[in-house]
Image (tube, rainbow, N blue to C red; front, side, top):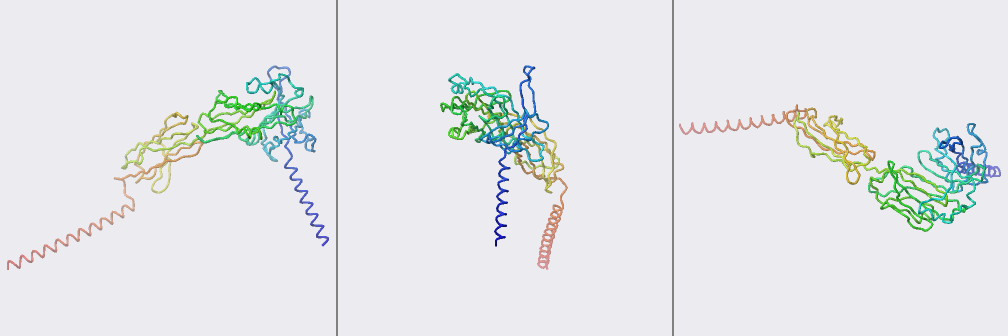
Length: 439
């Protein structure tokens, strides 16, 4: 019994150690390879790039053996030990799986703090004096996780001439690329975190969303968190979750009803006194086409006749679309039809597109008919519209038709014989009666 108890205790101790080891391993923040981008010392306007390494930790006093390891191709002076209490930089997408060639994208560079001139940000620096707290080395880091799972922009402060910065402001988004249907609400994720121990955290904040598309931009919404008011908005139906904004740093933009013109890049910027960080989110409105075939139903056709059939695709976005035709015969087999023309795109009042294809259908090789289908391949999905085709007339009959014709012929022959026998029989009877009267 004593031996059993000892074995039980040893097993329990082993399981406990494994759990602790696994949890420690899973909670460890990844080391991120990064490019250090700085202004060139002697060439004005030029920059230099050097490989660097970011060791992330959530506690400034914690270091493990792994953090002391430096790859041979990285200068030890280019290794940063970053403290991120919010653990935003500890996301799993920033650490590639073991043996993977894919890596997160990362860039770190010196950051120049300055007051903003925007009217909804100016109240944050109304005193006009720069606090002593700003006298340090400041860095800005931009990171993009694997498969675009996460994008982060962080502003960090390090004591002068050290490589141990602390994250002061972090802005992130988990919707780096979003697709939405036309007319539906959509949420563009943006969250931020401010170090509560920083003197800048109690001075208020401001949030700004801007839209950019093909070189043109405009303000979507601006919010002054210090005075708790929407400073400016130029997009109807755009709003924020103001309660979540103040309580959880949820700065996500909500578009109540998406339109085609909403496709583009949205930039979420969070301002603190003298600091700002931003992330960009791509939104694409994807609406598949509606299809209609004209004429429908198709008229009856005879072999050798040419029918002109048109398929209209409408209400789709973006403009990319492939139109084609298919025919399924009586044997159930489908084959493509090539002799079709396609028109150019037309844009409707709501920004959606339309396009049509016309088919000159030769019925010579279509047997007795079948099903004609218009196929539209679009980023929003594949759509089909079908109509039936019947070919009648002088085509060679099938085996079933031949058998039916033989059957009909036999029936008709039988009817003719019966009628003939009936008339001949009645004629004989009449002749006999006349003969008897004469006698």
